[in-house]
Image 1 (cartoon, rainbow, N blue to C red):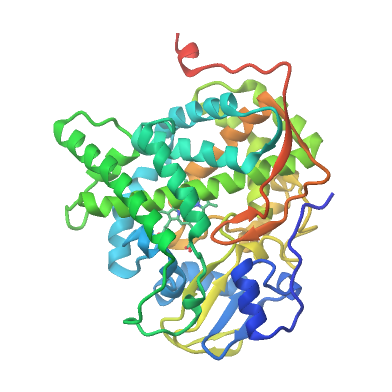
Image 2: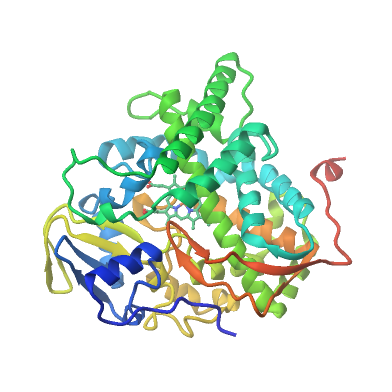
Length: 457
Ligand code: HEM
């Protein structure tokens, strides 16, 4: 069974059709040749863009000379009402300073500190999961939001403010034109940007709510009563170069991106992983067998190798961030072609992860490939978390969360695909299923869940 892949568009289409398809879904707006080509140039009257699959170019853009390829303002523009000056949208010295403060909170050694909160959120996800025909994207979204609130602010999703933020984020995602057409028109900076009213309203509500939790936390830090979670760590870390920490207002921008980047993406990966296991029952049984060892100690992660490879393979087939866009800060030459300053450079995990010249059986789900051949192919064709200095700071965190959630859910439940509900992948900001991912969920007879408290006794 080959997991669903979007129908590519015809090789040649008019600019109008391209933009229309692009607005609907950036995956089906692409021609099939991008799964074989090393590069493709798109010419429009407004701009040129280069989709680069050539590993040499990918390395140049992301790792060797990232300063010459800043994030494209055209693409992040739609997110500004929500994210302000967050690390996701900034460039240059402003971005460097933000990373110097954020990165220590996610360093390898500190991952352990988030384990207990992720464990508790996984147990809560099991307790919340209904049986019968279930839309698992919504369940995964709930679970991922719970993880973010527990690890950042030590509050569960049931908390009143957490609930409000969660619901507003869902409204925001429905209303936000993630890749708005204006992004592709060369409008001058003074031209008013037309964000939809609902998007602006949601962004304002979310920022207000985050503002109140952040202010509360600043007060707790001052009083010496703050819990030792990610928010406290980030708010008390001083920039090693200037000695200054984030002001409370700046922290609102960062919390907004942690929530958006860390919740949408993890929920997408988890729900596709569940779908892949539902359609590959043998692999699902292997995950269930591995999960028997689950215990609330960080060391257990070393025993969940196959589960981790399932999650890795889900990230390969359905990378939550399907494309990343940068801009040429100066003239470049790409595979013998001249690319002018300002040209858009697209790095596409979606195409690299399924590239026919890099991967063997690129469209098949095969978690065992990670124990062998995949490691070599991954060097050139696997970047679900990007690479280089702008790599996702939450990568290790997300691998821990995905593996642990998957093990918990599959230990407790059997997931089966519904033949008349094959999900169709589409991408706006992240890769989702067009009408959700529906699976039949049945509780396993042997399921039991050891609680953190229980084992402490
Ligand atoms: C499966 C889950 C995740 C995936 C696939 C993912 C993927 C990515 C990718 C591809 C980027 C680079 C985007 C670009 O350069 O255009 C990124 C950036 C980022 N991610 Fe993640 N992410 C995940 C989870 C998380 C989590 C859990 C957090 C934090 C709690 C997080 C925080 C961030 C931040 C702050 C950035 C911006 C970094 C920068 O621009 O310097 N992500 N992520």
